[in-house]
Image 1 (tube, rainbow, N blue to C red):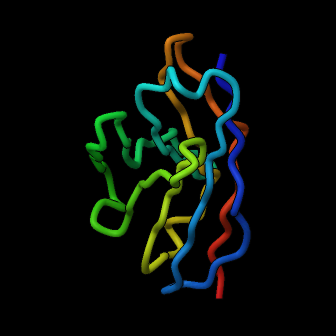
Image 2: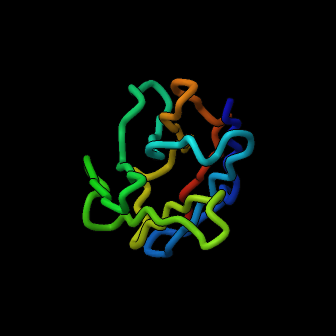
Image 3: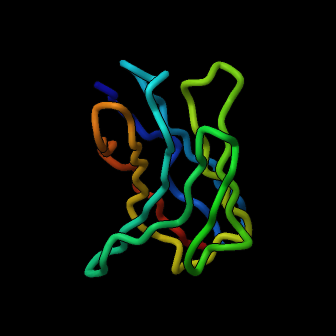
Length: 115
């Protein structure tokens, strides 16, 4: 199986950038894609984008154009980078992966946006 842990959340000021990490363990070599989602209080969980094993990245939603998903050289950490952060970006951010064992969610990391 695959276990995911997000990190890097915290307080961000409007206009700044953020970088979140999703560290995978277990059968990492079976991961087909890693997605980033977010959920603000009282709202549905929204897909921000995905990075596929072939290197293709697709982005969705309101943060499209400000978001980059990448993978580090060790192969077991995926990043979400977001620029020009806005108050509406405040949410719990989750990573999710599809692997040979099915889908796995991380526990989420909280991002607070405030001046």
